[in-house]
Image 1: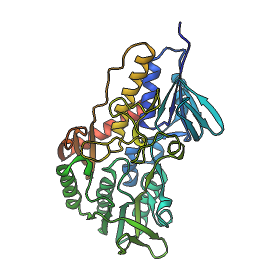
Image 2 (image 1 turned 180 degrees about the vertical axis):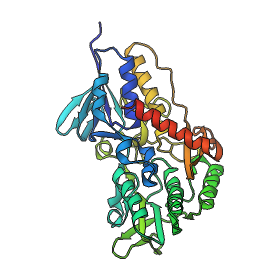
Image 3 (image 1 turned 135 degrees about the vertical axis):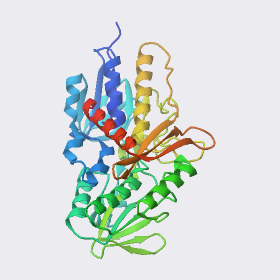
Image 4 (image 1 turned 90 degrees about the vertical axis):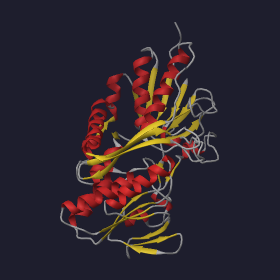
Length: 383
């Protein structure tokens, strides 16, 4: 009989939860599966779009992480302050936790403070509090200028800001209001990693919805008193209500782990997700995987989910004395909410060379209901 082993999973987002559940179902009961997260509740991020449009309440898309204990998964609540990849040890609020295998799934940190004045001037659409406050602002006060912006070109869920803009227009029109809704994007086009055809299709959807789309506008300063945005080219724009996607950065504990590549994110094998440290894997938003196109694999839950399954199966196989055979292939898909109960849908292979091979479906009601069904299934199953 072999000695019981421990898998330490840092982060309880999509990737961390999928890995934990899969490992617990496949490993002997004597092995420990430990999940670390500083949050008390898991937030289903894709549904924040429906929070900002008023179709959901934030508390309805969250689940307590302590439910994992009933499934035989140990939960440690705290902040990861240091990681020793060589010994597969993490320091959580001063406590060292060693493991036989480690999965890095801490995601990307939201850093609105990197743009002076941004946090005070608007609402962070990537938090439950911010999405809720943005909706309240839309429906509680008259406004003639609603602005949304991406404060950097790299962020999780590349479709989300474009969906948010279209849902904002839809929300206001359903209330009989017709202000100008402008999306200032730091990137040169929507979802550029998916290729020029998908990018053009999404841009057409956004502009057809009535959004004033302005790409390649990098914000450098926000002023809550004058309600103005200053951009890198020196131009200024005014707003009444502002919703933003903040800059994304690597968590400090990972930045000092020795596992970071020149792209600023954790390096991992594109197919096995193993880092340069044996027995240490990286999945989801904290990993950077270069594509044949020269861009990085987008940060999206669909990839974190698939990567988590690959890594969990690899750990089980290795500990059973077998070769790991499953590989992450770069396949992904995403719904794109357009408003009026409709959504588009895109899918394809992001590892294809020289560019991702994608198929895009125009907005229709069944794609919207497909996303609703996915949300219901996720919240019923996880944590």
